[in-house]
Image 1 (cartoon, helix red, strand yellow):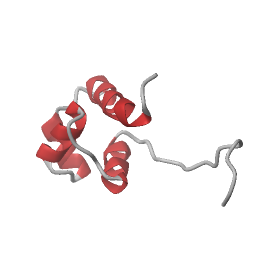
Image 2 (cartoon, helix red, strand yellow):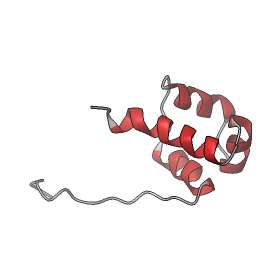
Image 3 (cartoon, helix red, strand yellow):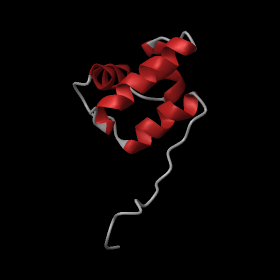
Image 4 (tube, one colour):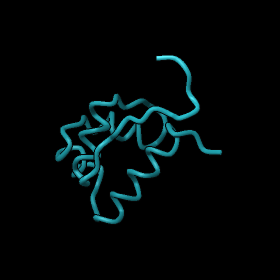
Length: 74
């Protein structure tokens, strides 16, 4: 099974391809350093949640947090 952290770069690449967007274009529109974005897309570096939200916003997406029904505690 693919972990969520491995699937984010894949999803972003698919969105980029669907809109014919380059790394340079996405970097500029999202306000994310191009080298940071490139490392993230290659799976060799992290992208913090704030920057991930900026990237997703370019494509009209946003993150939502949901509590799992099977979780205990807070």
